[in-house]
Length: 124
Image 1 (cartoon, rainbow, N blue to C red):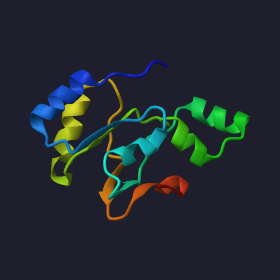
Image 2 (cartoon, rainbow, N blue to C red; image 1 turned 90 degrees about the vertical axis):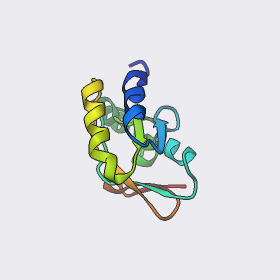
Image 3 (cartoon, rainbow, N blue to C red; image 1 turned 60 degrees about the horizontal axis):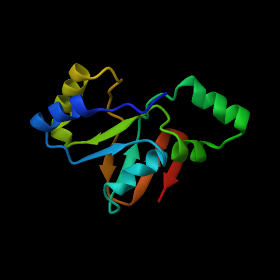
Image 4 (cartoon, rainbow, N blue to C red; image 1 turned 180 degrees about the vertical axis):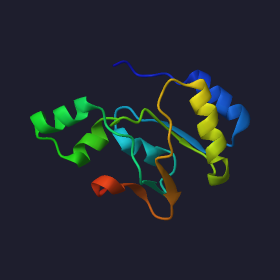
């Protein structure tokens, strides 16, 4: 599918919430988060459910999860980093202004890189 553009919902979000980072999860997959800040660890504790096409690619292409998450968006088109105390407001604004599925997928922690807990993956 074509890349989704999130201008409308992000402009509304920026008016109301202290956004610390935005990462379009396209080529480079989940590793795009590291472009935001190389001195923290982004922990994906509850990832979006990958669409069936990703399971098909993995099975038929014999592609490991690590490669899948660093190549494809795996169901997450955009990551929005906000302060924990503004998370609920951010989710509400995005749900009201977007057709995309919105949910909290993780948090920022001490360390470096990206962890995808469910799949036991780490990227640096």
